[in-house]
Amino acid sequence: MLIQEYSIKKVSDILRFEKPQKVCLIFWHGLGDLIMFIPCLKKLRKLFHDIQIDIALQAGIGQEELIPNALLIKNANRKIDGYDYTFQIHFPMCEGSNGLWTKSEWCCKSELGIDPVSDYPKIKKCKSRLVACHFQATALPGCCNPTEEVANLIWNEVIEAGFIPIESLFQHKYFNPVNAKFGFIDRHVRGISSSIDRLIGLLQNCFASICVASGNLCLSLSIMQERTLYLKKNFEIKSYTKKDISFVDVNRYEKGSVKKWLEGING
Image (cartoon, rainbow, N blue to C red; front, side):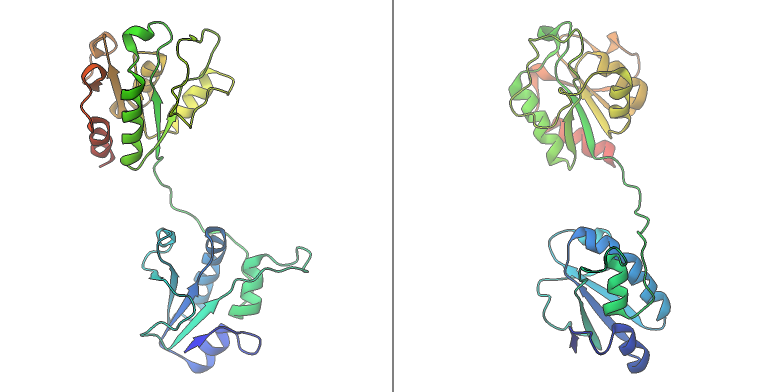
């Protein structure tokens, strides 16, 4: 049976008096609503621990990463086979309450029929998906910089590997005007006032760093040596460290090299 209206009986009323074995809540809403609803779902499951309470989410938008084992559906207006009851949760707005109720509290009151819950779930910590990309050296651009074509290949391979590239070049006092931004770069820090602590903070919040011979290279080797990729042109990596650092040759770049490297260190 599909339940869509709660003016007479709330979800908890049916669970308490009908005592079903398995029910499913259809939650066909956006990311913010789902995050606010998770504590409500947890509270409902705790109150009715003897009933299997599942949740169904819209397929294709990735929300199941927040609720493992969620069912994925393509139609919110039909009962789900295998359950005694299917409840469509509307998660209504609370206009007119003048801030008395949050959306999650109002859902508890108007649909679930449980004491109001106003909290946010603890979200698991995920590794950063940012990859710092530094394609241009200040002092010796001709000896260090890859061509725009090669840099574009590297940028796109970062994306293909499931990461988010960001250019980590700050335009500081001694910025070399030869190093104009490559046309394909749409995430950068060039408009931000430069400082060492900002660069360090950026690199510390990146998963990996890909850079030419530059100050960024040396900082990256200090912060995440095992996740630094050197873009070699004229200078050997041994000029900067005796450690075994991964590198690619931008003079003879082999397509797919950066993607393969990222996938390798990502485990």
